[in-house]
Length: 466
Image (cartoon, rainbow, N blue to C red):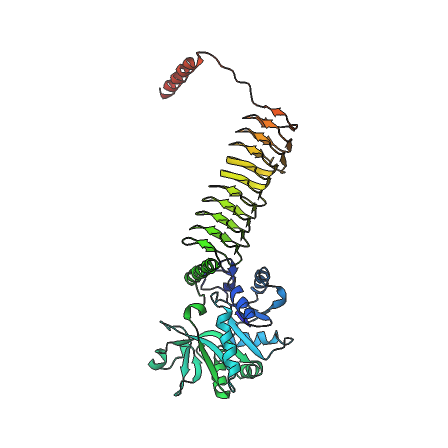
C-alpha cells in the first residue's frame, strides 16, 4: 500500500504532493519502485479524489500498469482509514504480508525495506515490523516508545505526547510497516479516533501488535526515510538523488566532473565524459566515449558513441550520430537527426532535420523541415524558409552540395546532388544536380557617389536639428 492522498497544501500548490517531480520522476514513483524491488507483488496507491487519475497517468509512464492500481480515500479520515481503503483494493491479491509505505519518500530503496521482511519472518511471535530512525530534532514526529526491556510498546504522535520524557525520545516512526495480513485486518477494525486530531491513526496498530506478540522497530538512516512536506525538503531530496545517481554512473565507468543533474531514466555507457553543469533529462541515452561539455541540457535524446557535444548546447528529442560534433551554443530541437561524423556548429538551430553523414552546418544557420545529404556544406547565415504563416514545407538538399553563406532556401524546394548555390542567393525553385544557382541582385558601382551621398546625409541631419 502506498499512502499518496496528500493534497499538497504545504507545497502551496493545487498539484497533489506525490506528483511533484524529483530527478525526472514523480515522488510517488520512488516508494513504488522500492516496494516492488523488495518483493511486493502489486502496489495499491491510496489517492485523493482529485489526484487519482493524475497519479495513475504519471506512474504509467515509468512502471508497468500491471504492477499497480489506484484507489480513493474520500473523505480523508487519517492513515488508519487510508489503509482500510487500500485493503479493499487488495481483496483479489494473494499474500501473507502487507507492506505499507509513504508516497512522498523519494530516497527510499528496496534495500531499506527488505530488513522488514527479514525481521518479521525470523520472529516466531511478532505481528508487525516498522522502520524507525534516530532524529536530531524529533519535533513533529511520532515517537517510538519502549518498555523496560527495550521492547516496542507503541508509537505516540507528537501532539499526543504526555510528558517531558516522551518528548525527549529521539527514535521516531518513519511511516513504513510490514504486517501479517490477518493481524492487520483485525487491528484496523479496532481503531478509534480518540486522539488530538480525531483521526484513525495507523500508528495505533503498533500497540496492538506489541500486545499480540510483538512489534519490531528496524532502524535505518534518517536520510533514506526523508519525507517531503514543502519545496525546501523537495530540493534537498532532489540534490541527494542527483548525487546518488552521479556516483552510480561513476562506479559504472563514466567520468563525471563536478555537479551535474542526471535524471533517473538516463542511461550512460562506459567511458563517456560528462562535464560540470550538464543536465541530462528524461530517457536520454549516452553512448560509449561520448563527451558532453560544460552547461549542456539534453532531454529525451540519443547521443551515439564518440559524439562530442561542446559547451552550452540544448538538445531535445533528437539523435546525434557516432563521432558527430555539435556546438558550442547549438540548439537541436525535436526530431533532429545528426548523422555520423556530421558537424553542427555554434549558433546553429535545427528542427525536424536529417543531416547526412559528414555534412556540415558550422555556424549561424537555421535548418527546419529539411533533409541534407552526405558531405554537403551549409554556409554561415543560411536559412530554411519553411513556414509561410500557415503551413510548413520541406527543403531537400542532396549529397555533396555547397550552399553559400547568407542563402535563403524558400520551401518547398530541392537542391540536387553536387549542386552549388552561390553566396546570398534566394532559392525559390529547384536546383538541378550539378547546377550553379545564383539568385542575388546584380551589383552596380557609381564612381565618386559616396562623397555626394555623405554630403546629402549630413545636410539632412543638420536640417533636422534646426
